[in-house]
Length: 151
Image (tube, rainbow, N blue to C red; front, side):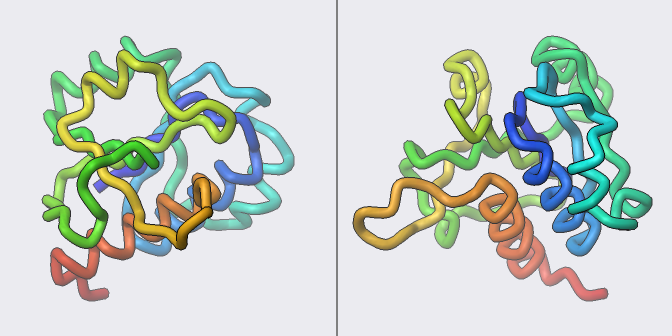
């Protein structure tokens, strides 16, 4: 299982996603461009030493990421507030790739169209969205629970 951050805007969220992925035994990939350098101090400060457990792999763009999928096919699961299916009803598979969009704009339409599934995390009435790293951690935890992941 892996978490993929699409063109992230906030380095601290990347650090938090790295930490969550490390704690749930997932890998992290980043699709550039980013709103900051990938060697940003803010990423390291939030990720702490968890970056050693889940070192992020960067892709120069969506097309480069797709090229990598050819050697490692995976179901693309987009977390989106526009998802029709609830996270709680979705059935995860061990090799799923969880896609998370930009904090400011989500993912481009091309990525929406490429996703095999679009799921949402149910929230309280009036809430717009969760922090991207928090959403990723919730989805990873639910996927691991469903798959009977035991450490």
